[in-house]
Image 1 (tube, rainbow, N blue to C red):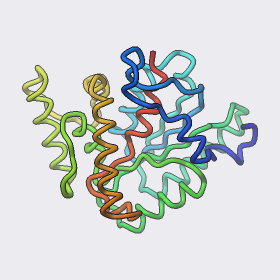
Image 2 (image 1 turned 30 degrees about the vertical axis):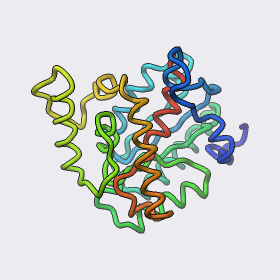
Image 3 (image 1 turned 90 degrees about the vertical axis):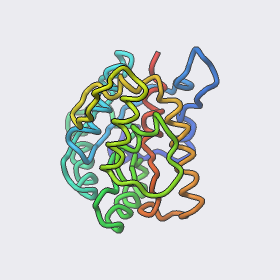
Length: 235
């Protein structure tokens, strides 16, 4: 892609072609390795999500590390759109290669339903991708340890569940969750393929029950799509 006007504008067919297929080979536990791409990941939060995706990027091959740009905005959902636009323009001015993928990472949390839905709709109209979570990003952490196929769960409950699961399944008996913990990805990496399958099942159940009403899909997330795509580059 040579024109900035096309930055991040990937067709659904091309997107699905790049998505890894997990579980086919013990030699490639994170799926088939896709073509090298440039990623822009713009996160609503300033700590939890950026630190998680930065940790993934650091474990990618050297020629991929510089291709992944992670930003934490600290703004609301719609402000993510503006932040992404500004970064895309900044990159054009620097004459660096365009971002092939533009991903927005944000939660339903306490934002009004219309704002949550409109952000997804606007991003998709630009053919960008949304790694959204309903209700909170911590749902993705919990899925590493257990299924979430029931009813809505709050952010606070997810944090408590995550602490309980880490304490019960590791040697960290005094584990206390911190949003700025840079070790979360390393702690959960070996469980990621399982978490992706659980996220797929949770999302499928919510789509079946709620249709296209993203704000009503709780518990559900699309974080696994971005995580799977990035981890497919790992050796």
